[in-house]
Amino acid sequence: KLVDFKLEFGRLWGEYDELYIILADEISPDNCRLWDVKTGEKLDKDRFRQDLGNVVEGYQEIAKRLGLIPETGLMSDGSFDEKLAEGLEEIDNELARERRLRAVKKTPPKSPRGV
Image (cartoon, rainbow, N blue to C red; front, side, top):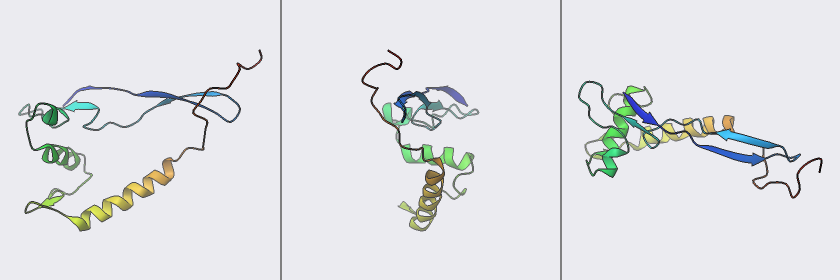
């Protein structure tokens, strides 16, 4: 259950001093509260904030429910599944290449346009 979330905005200046308002498109356990519908168990950043323990397990449970990792998870007998992690890294890199934006300025123009 999605309890709440936050949106993050930013601004970038373009090649011709145009202003772009950027909206972050990430929804993750780091910027929203996710609780199990049946049990009310917290599966998000509150696990860390409230010292509830099992932070990795909570994040892993969300990834399993979203179909991002197999039902077996990323951990096996208390150790990280390196082979699976390598595969995830390749997926992330492939997506990252597709999401790249062209370079834009991060500072405003020295004077307003048309003045």
